[in-house]
Length: 347
Ligand code: KG4
Ligand code: ZN
Image (cartoon, rainbow, N blue to C red; front, side, top):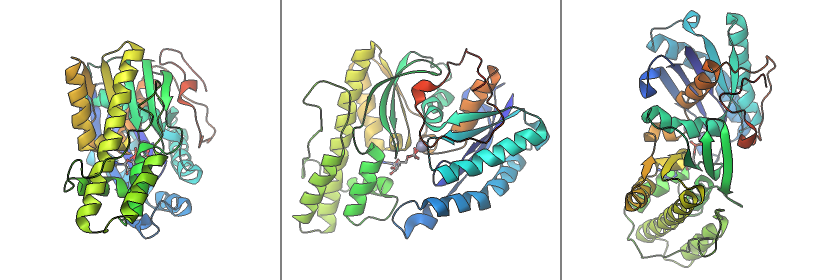
């Protein structure tokens, strides 16, 4: 089954075609991504109305380009998958409107995909042998969650952030030290030049039991350190390194705890912050120490993309699930409310 995937939940327009007849990432027949980073950079963050308008401009050309690169036409598609939430409502509506209209015109099924389920299933593209149960660490710009994955569509929340998401903390910290948007990757690059231990920040909420996170206090610690420093390039890099180490250690400590709580030794990591090299190294070390396994998608499949939506949608469409024809999106959407993969739904 060949499924077109459309991602427009935030500031990336992503399109891909996934073929369920091939294993894992081999099923990705074509994919394309258009990033709006340059558009939002001068505002220091995503401007929702500009994001929606740019998706309108870019989505149809990107679909044509993706199909052409795969040597495909719309007649080769067996279904359409689109991100229906969580995300920016206007941006989501662009993808949902195009996806639903295309599916209607082709008389093919369409499915609303949960953006975080897309992230969560992306590691399965890289490791087709990977099967639940496992624990997932979802770390993006809007979410930081530890989830016990009992099956596809069977998600039990173990812990989540009480305030900022990990990616949001990276972005805000970068911004307060004067780094351009988008801050997370910039801060990580800068941390490479930082001296480990020059600044030591706390590992929030690791001194007590539980699997929740809190990153907003860390941002304040960075602000105070930055304001009290000489504000030169080396201190900026040292602070970036101290901040990155604090976030990475905190995530690793909670991941180990979550594996213990779920009685599992397999961790998957997904979402934009999963592209962070120090996080990847630290979690690999943690998994080694307990003779466990950790799986990450390649960095391009950690950040937002159309491939993960095509893949997640294809799994559900191939199982006979599809959603009714109205163009509805869910800016907020609890992943625990999703149907299990083996349950046929007409949601
Ligand atoms: O999953 P994603 O692309 O979009 C959302 O669904 O939010 O995640 C974006 C987030 C941003 O906050 C970005 O700063 C962060 O992921 N990010 C990183 C890195 N690459 C992206 N954070 C730390 N290190 C990175 N290398
Ligand atoms: Zn995302």
